[in-house]
Length: 152
Image (tube, rainbow, N blue to C red; front, top):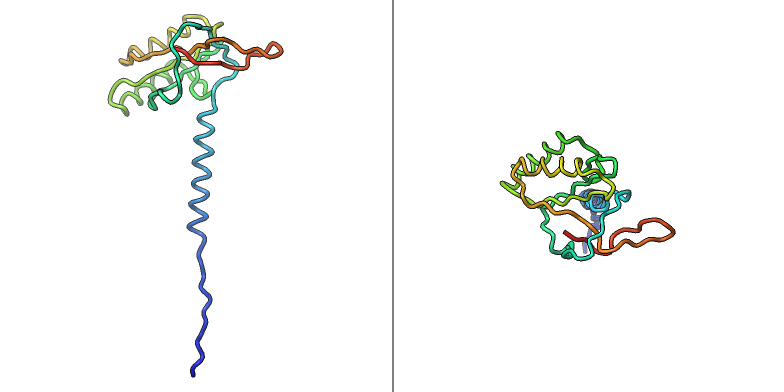
């Protein structure tokens, strides 16, 4: 009888490790984008407004924030009115028309700053503009802890 040669089978793990790293990067980026809401913005109360849930929100929705000093931002990235207009024009072209805009404005922000955002959106042709407010504020030791429900 002849002896059989036993060869060690090698398993190349490099492609699997590459895929795992790609998934980790994807999840880190998407989670970070979802959490980037300016915590310094205190929203106006609207106890009788309709409730907005995240399940029913259009995925094309863009949230524009206006803080109490009038600074405009998206995902905590400050921008000028001109930069905002460029972003909205590109989204308009990408989605071939109107998409929802939600404005999170601090209740202490001057109306002229909120109106600047509204003017940019309406000049492009965006008509689905909603304002985010809270049903009631939760206070703990004098600090605002965020909305109970969102309204438009």
